Image (cartoon, rainbow, N blue to C red):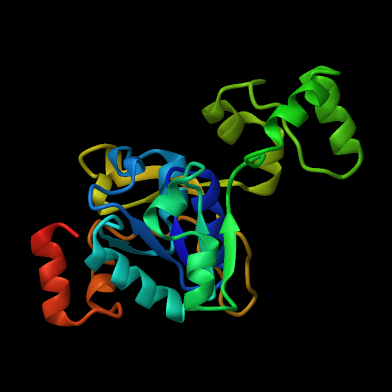
Length: 231
């Protein structure tokens, strides 16, 4: 799976698939995902877990060529670009379908490009608390987004606590930021009886997945050229 997405919503989906065994390559701009500036943020850590990372300039022909080579070997391409951006970058569905007809193309757009205006008057017909109670009663997972701060929800709400949603872990990368390098992260999605996921297992540090660029479809000299030209 190629993940051309930033921040949390779509990358969280990629992290879940990675934890379930999928090979997920996060495609970032050469400046990196903006989340990289928040290395101890719980959501940033969760959004990056289990993935390989590669960065290049999709506006450059060389970078786009490498991306197309990766598309040929991918099963899924997911993005959360603003409307119109895939067309400008030449990473839209029709373009990628011509490269690989069976590609699964996922747009993580929250409520979609056209439905927001239609949904807004419907949501305004009742309060947030009423929507939450009604949807939960029908078996639809729903929480009021502004009922508490994000951190309060993760660490104090009874629902995440009952699920074991957050676990305490550590990493040598955070030794200068917290005692013992300890921090909180989202717990594993599944637990296997024969190969159990270890809650609190240290994360991998920066640079662990830089090998991804050299193992992509590009050759050694081609990769060097991309790096020197910022592509």
